[in-house]
Amino acid sequence: MKTVKKPSAEQEKIAELTNDLQRTRADFENYRKQMDAQKAQTADFARKETVKKFLPLLDDMERAIASVPDLAPLAKSLEQTTKDLGLEKIESSAGTEFNPDLHDAVMMEGGDGEKEIVSESLRSGYKYGGDVIRPAMVKVKNT
Image (cartoon, rainbow, N blue to C red; front, side, top):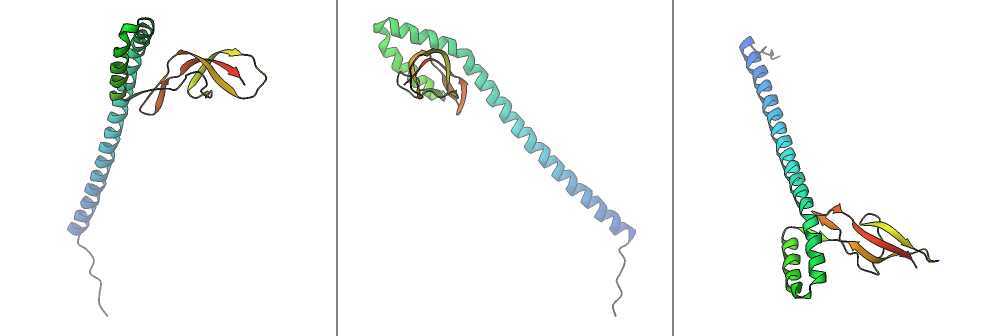
């Protein structure tokens, strides 16, 4: 029969310190991952807030383009720029099915139907990064 050799005090201390070091490394790696995720979340929030600040300017540009036909070429440039920034306009033209997640109904026109559709778009809505940052303001009617 073989006798089991008991580890010396030094070997036990080395094993204990090795385990402590492994736990510390794992804790640090978890902390680093949390910080990276938090940085990305903060940067995304900052981008969305910055884009929100430009929405009134986009509204003014849309109104100017609508009222001055000579500015029509500017519409294409504006559309391309918003697309390049990742800003997506919410579909809210007349005849679009009303979606309370995308549209903010501020007026209702009567009707006897159960289906709600957009009858007029009063202000454009936008998505950024797949999230609605401002719903479209619309007039809705039942059909």
